[in-house]
Length: 104
Image (cartoon, helix red, strand yellow):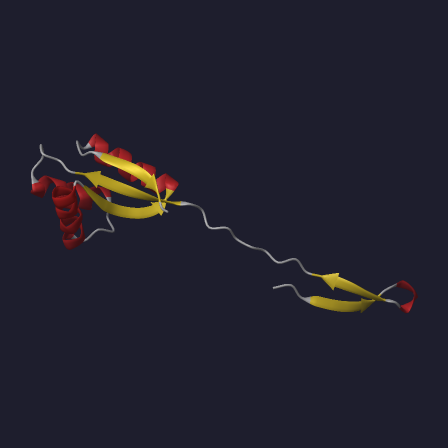
């Protein structure tokens, strides 16, 4: 919000001082997706999700695993790019198929 104030300038004329407004642009967010895994057990997938993404409760991890199992892909988390890349790469390193997608 811009605030206008007046102050006396040289010669008694009013000078308009304008404060600039700062607008913060949100950084783009990314979806970490888990793909269906016919190799690993459901228990392994759930425990790995909880290890890699500590914000996930056991119920949340179970829901992601079931979503991936039933529909082919499950949404793990939506976050900034750097943590999203970390989660995705760590899931891959543990033998799970994961991809990133920009949030629309």
